[in-house]
Amino acid sequence: MKPLQFRLLQAREASDSAREEEHVAFADFLGTELQNVLAFDMLTEEITPARVMDGVDAVLVGGSGAYGVTDTVPWMSQYIDCLGELAQQRFPIFASCFGFQGLAVAPVS
Image (cartoon, rainbow, N blue to C red; front, side, top):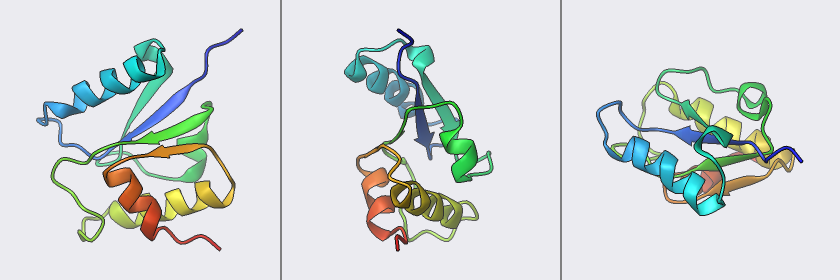
């Protein structure tokens, strides 16, 4: 049986030491290999539901380092809208810390 694939949405600067630690911690907690948790850098990649869901079984969102959902950085609205769309489609999401903040303010109809 093929192992589950996860997309880890990360809002961490490249210099943030927690970036890799978070990736490894999610894989360890899920009891899966690191390659089954696909990191997605929200600071540099276009955030769309199609890209985030592509080829994975669930989405994970952890911490953010320097960011909060009220920040006016260019990618924030894409992130929040994407979480809302995923929730509306009932796509599996695990959200903690910054992820939970984003999910709490995401538009879901």
